[in-house]
Image (cartoon, rainbow, N blue to C red; front, side, top):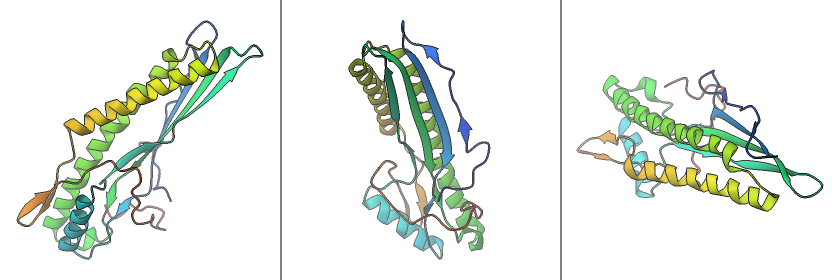
Length: 206
């Protein structure tokens, strides 16, 4: 289940329709929300570290921003592209440690520092999408549905390339651990971890 939404978690960036060409009107709808947390069920910091280390060894993410991007292309009776509606729902996942409040302050601080770095990293990923996706408004010009689809895919591919370039140049700070540090990679779209808590606010302990 998604996390509790706030004004900062759920933002609607619906754009007014604009003319991208002689006939094509493009609307871009970007929304944001928090998704289910990446839960580390660890009784103490040592267990937490071991779980994070195991994930790192498998190159699994510490956080993510996903988008189920879609395009609804509309044509007239002659087959000319007349409108395009782009929906881009951004969903952010961040790590959670339910037992954190019962831990020594030093261990809580280590987790908080790591989570804050992951959150900052994912914020930049959201910002990249919000910078790149409005380009649909001027890129989709037709003249027909096939051309519009190719134009949609070109902008989408450019956005993902920008995401990959950012990941290649910057990663979250590593989780501190006794005797060393570990780096947790971010992106793995197939990764599934602990199911979301039934608690309506899974971030309450953070």
